Image (cartoon, rainbow, N blue to C red; front, side, top):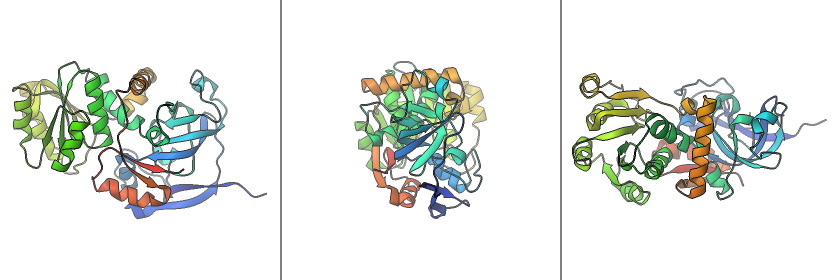
Length: 340
């Protein structure tokens, strides 16, 4: 008896986009606590590039799956999911989004179908398209965890957001505005400045032509940014520390610069700065935090203060091209792959 096959994407060695392979495998049945979904769209994240390159927080086990975010339709539900899905309205046929709270090397969603933990599913809001449905959780939970949960942002505070043209950067701008704070966005390119202003940034600093520290001091009347939300690290750390307010909080959630990162010890001591690494897993690995975060994001999506910014939509056949596009750092918002 022949098995039903499905297309998936995985890789057998680290490297560039060329290592990603389209493969036909038997359709997997969900095990205890798991759900299988038919993929409608995929949202791309820097974490997937890093996993493929062997530079991520977890290492691939070959052949490795890949991918965190998808919008899809529930096809099958494994045993032991009733308690997890209770009250969510999720059943066979439901349209759902995946939350990155699993190992992408094991449960990666790149493909036509994917099996994921039941706890990673959230019913996709009806007011969002399939494309937007795969563009929610990584960006908004990343911004929420640092700026709202740990940073405890207050109205009128200044929040400095680096690499702000990324999907997480746009999410951070929207969150800062929702909280009544003031978003200062940075970008290296003057071409991206107008888009960031239109997206709600109160101020945009073009770091290739403007002095970051001087501009932050000017904008904040010498006070500095109460929260710094940084995706770059590397040599950026010293100017970011100089741009931070007294007892400011610097959250490093990415490492777009792979150069050595120097801890600004003297400034941290002199000005009482908090400098800490941060990942979204500090939210999703704690049940109470995760529940509050989902409630916050869904409320913001419902009232319109959160709206995913989509940069470019690729077809499923263009998966390698979209990976290369992400690595080029041209995007302004989320890169998505549409399967339908």
